Length: 122
Image (cartoon, rainbow, N blue to C red; front, side, top):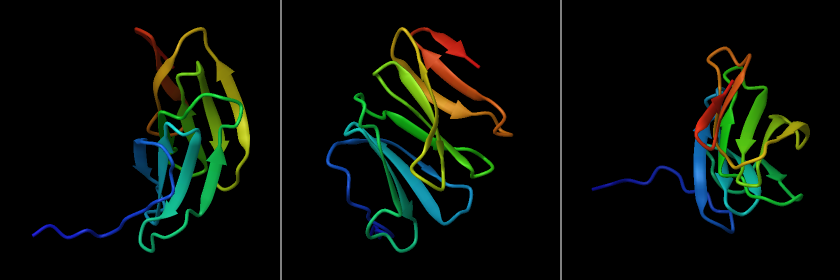
């Protein structure tokens, strides 16, 4: 018998990614519906934080930095964004000429790697 440990509900569109925050307590989710949510991984319920991409596009993927201070999201609106993980602040938006299909942090959080069409950028 499978036991469900936690259910979070709050996105209005399909989820595309999730990642545990390094604090071990929260997780982040990204959806087609232009939002990123940070959740308490033990309590569930309402999101701790909601980051909205209100300038268009959707957040296909979101990942937490290994130091826990930042989130990176990427979207098919040709952008990737660096967020403050403890507020709803966008620190930086990078606009490319094509879809940004994936993104992630380097192991020490010093760099962001993205895939853009058939290329990888570091």
